[in-house]
Amino acid sequence: VDAHTHTWGNALNEALNFGVTTELDMFTMPSFFQPQQKLRDELTNTNQADLYSATILATAPKGHGTEYGFDIPVLENVEQVSEFVEQRINDGADYIKAVYSSEKSKRKHFPSISLEILKALSIESLKHNKILVVHVDDLVSAKESISAGAKGLVHSFMDKEVDDELIKLMKDNKAFIVPTLQVEASISGL
Image (cartoon, rainbow, N blue to C red):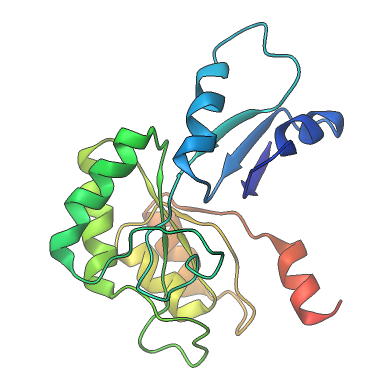
């Protein structure tokens, strides 16, 4: 299982060539995902990896995810959250993904949704029996995401070492992390 991909083109065929039978996609267009979703339960699907996806991620105007040239919906206030999550459910999303950077964060690469929007996304996701996973860049954002109800962090962070507070939060909330260490290594030049 590759637990953090962004899938398009023939990536699912290539994944199978390398022994990856299932991909968990963190942002792709519904028009790509929906035909792939139908293949998951077919026993005759032997030419490509199975795909699970969040479809479109939850982000702020000009936030991470908007820089790729796709016209995607963005969240500016809590009142938009219910419709956003319902649209993802209608797209077939298996989980909801958000991009979050705390106001306390010292590193800001892109604008972020607010903590209130993040909390609303968690509540609304659970109403639809979906989990919320969050892209974070720093420890404080990780802690706030888990405290807000996220069940997963789909990137680690490099600003500080993991501390006992985050570990306790994650254990208490039965949360997980997909560290994507290769991404962090490439950014740091290792």
